[in-house]
Image (tube, rainbow over the protein chains, first blue to last red):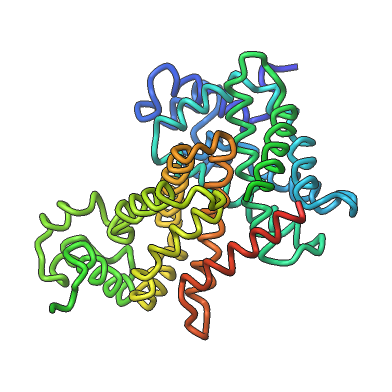
Length: 188
Length: 188
């Protein structure tokens, strides 16, 4: 088993996070990332449209998984609980990469253009969840509102997960954040 | 009374929307926007950091107003209703500019970089509302969750307002969207 069991995209992301942390995001080139990963610049561009995208690998497959899980959730599950269960089902992948996720978070927080790209990705996640909820028969605007608030609860859970000195799993923090959301909604 | 009672920023925005609609966002320069508004390029840059920012004038003062109104809302008002009332209080300004807002929306929707900037502005609005709710004694995470869902309901209201063939006011659509949100939250 190699050093990067996650495949080429993950290998490029690990190299990028290393270099961004060592010498800064601006001062790192795509060619340097490819070299560090033992790959060519051409391979980089086969997988990512630009330098920013390397920090968002697997987002499309995560979105596809969440969408599928929401669509397949038991009919008796409430819309919000169905989305939470879908997030939890996909959370193991992140738990195995917590340290890289922390370094990635620091890089994103320091760069406006990266945060803008992140918001675009979160918007895409929200749209995928909206579509999945519609296939469960949830009409608009309930589907849109539920999807958006789910993404917010997800962000809250991710922030707590990264900051947790006790190393609670992302699944644990998702559970807590969605409980907080249920409680908060009763105060509205 | 002049053609642009809203001041220099608004004058530049109107000129920009005209030019972006006529010849496209990419093909319009800052110099051309300034000329169309009867101003200099230097004046443009005194008001906006770049070409994208001209589509987001008055956002800072809108954010400041919403923040102030949330902080000053009656204590017996629920957090969500306080935010909605703050949005409604600031909605007249938009009703007077509906047609420009529609053209602006078309331009934003067609350009990823503009949508990314918009998400950044909405995130800033959410952060300002979070801070205002905290001053009302709403703890976290309730403040963060309530602020984020308010921004979503606001976006829904704005989309409905722009698409409404009956020309309902933004205030009317805010009222409806927040009612939808209350109803949706009961299904969670």
